[in-house]
Length: 237
Image: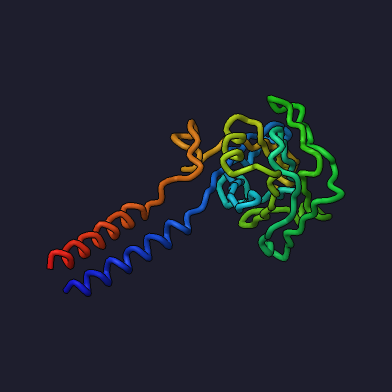
């Protein structure tokens, strides 16, 4: 009996440790439309995930289906990094594209050099140096559309951590600008993403909690308690 209990305790402890080790820091940004060239908005159909990658942060920009738009193409991305958190950008991954399209991006030779109409944002959006990317021509075909994504890796400067990213997202020091073409086949619009949503952002985005308590922690505590109980039983015997 003791042996079977010991086996259960070991399995529970191992599973809990595995789940604790697998916890990842992540957040989402909130998107705002800053131009009014059309009556359409892609705010509800663009998702921006920010994920800690130890020495870098991953920014995943996805297009999702919805009732607002049947088509659009995210064609340029710009980072306004006032805190100097990042020193390099690269393309980490992308989807294959749909309807014979290709999600194909570059991080050099990006034009225009800054977010179109970025001066209409409050505060003014001013892209940081080389932290920008664009879809290869033709951008409407190679950009990110519905059910597609592109993911960028932004390398941390020395001393930067994901807690710094969360802090700068929340106070507006770190923002992302997107230029989106072909709203239902029509005009382009500019958007600015900022703020912080998700567990790592704390209570409703009002506090910083860069390392959330894993859901598996109670399991780990219970397993350790059971192991202690077995040890006491053996000593008493």
